[in-house]
Length: 262
Image (tube, rainbow, N blue to C red; front, side, top):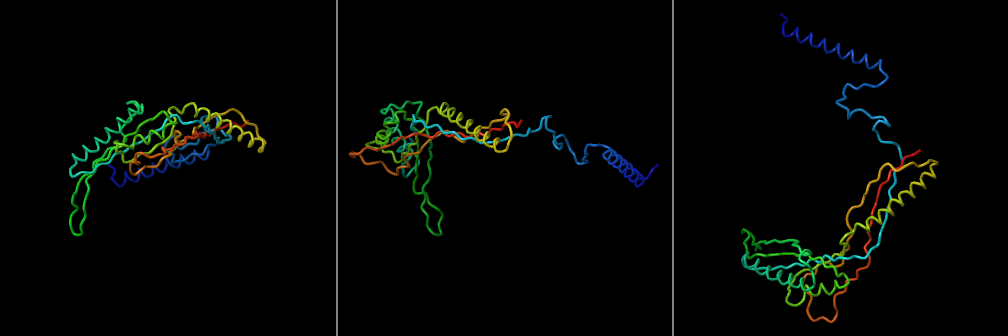
């Protein structure tokens, strides 16, 4: 019988023999061998067997100018009362008036959505004492999609004047469906990337091949904020109505294109 110590010595000798055999095998091979390789991800893949082909990469930018066809009008109501229920009831009345005025403006139910609702306690603070609740504030915001963009100024006035009692209003001009404008801008962007690649290839004395990869680097849909929040309702009976110049939206697209080099 071998003792535990003898078994350990024999195990060490056997492991050393295997290590020496691996080193000798590696020296006799034309391919480097790493004893630390843990799987296929640690091996480099040569070009032509799944690796990244060499090429020329450029970015291109395109801009399509288009008139906005929708205005997102966000109207808010705020109410304070001694109890949460009273604050909630008051803000509900104001929002009800806002929604009725929205219907008068021709805004459909599908273009009306809630954009925020909260009821928060209001505190009084005194040195050396715990905060004391003095009342509650209810806040609700409603987002309205108004499609008669040319009359957006009149819509703003209608939503904050008279008995509507809205406390805040803001407006963002946008496109109801930006896909066509984005497609036009994307075409420009790819053409721009091709022009840049042709210029670089000419300077470098190389010939471009086919496109092997395209990535869309665009961030978001186009929009334009024209009105900041209005802290209080605008006074009724004004001689001059609110003006909302629409202008054009810039629909911007950026692409990255990779070309083969022949």
